[in-house]
Image 1 (tube, helix red, strand yellow):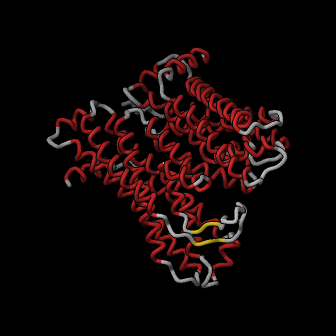
Image 2: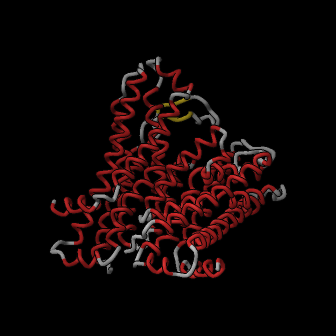
Image 3: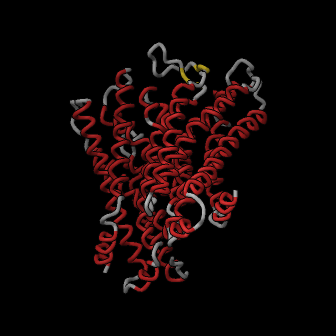
Length: 257
Length: 247
């Protein structure tokens, strides 16, 4: 707890929260500013049988693939970069505290911020939906599934970004990883399921709770279809993520700075 | 003097890992473009200008978000060295004008961006000719996509270099590039593409246009030059007036 408090103290005047709010704010602004002009969504608002809530959920869902890898990379890099400057690693080594404590503290901060981003998104979805007066009953289980699924994928990306940010003094490497993750995450909805599941960030596409019915082979189908989130690939990814977390932690503990 | 400064900047970035980003992003972009093109082609969604369709799938999101992010990472890297080990003090004592320092970094950044563009075009040609075996000849438009894409990226480069010069963090300017890319997309949708650096890049790459935006060329070139000059002046002014923070 003492180290966690120290980590938070170290973030002071580093404007981590400001950067976090700026990127998240731009994402939410971009997503929700489009709904007011979306004729398809407007037509669904008054219809209790139309999947208006699901349509609202896929807005942030589609953009998370782009924004979350970058947001994770920026926050992780920001809180790890300071340890690479000067002789900070040597100072940390002199403290009577294990390396794993540093790892856990930094992970908790990045993970905590990313989880709060997901919660903020969920709150904004509910607030926006209520504000425009969606007639459909709020599908709580779908929203919870979306939040849990996003958190599962994001936890894995946090682990990856944290390791790269801690292992490489040159922050070019973790930022490049974040950029590639954002590229994969953003276009993942256009990739076939098997391929996107292998690419870690591609699993953000599994969180689309509304899609087009392309079962007839028509890729330009306009018929919307409510989809259940498939937790099998997300579960597999999460288990691999836990293994990666342990592996990266071991690596970090033995890392020579 | 500028030649010497460029030479020095090249030397400083010689053993950098900047090439990783410069090679990998175009490679993944081309691979993803190929996959999406392949899926759509198998559904018979395309006819006619196949190269244009392939470029649309490859360059669309690249121009919207990922090209500016690549530029911002390279720009952050070029200033990273100055922000560490008291190098600001060394830089401020070299007998070179402030604007020359900034221009040299812009030239080196421009070189990396050009390399990324050439690689992307090479990968697109490989995808078209080797994977999809396009019978149509490689279009002349590709020269526009390459050079105007590169040229319009220079204004983004100038902005990002300025941000990375002022902000000591590596990551924050990259995060800002994402936010500014969204603003660029907004400007592009509103029809002010040539007015804002991050939308100039979309116009320059012109992946969405069936015909090249030749009409906008004069305003695009002019505005890119205006932004480059503006940010060189701003950077030089900042370096002359404000004290550096070395450490």
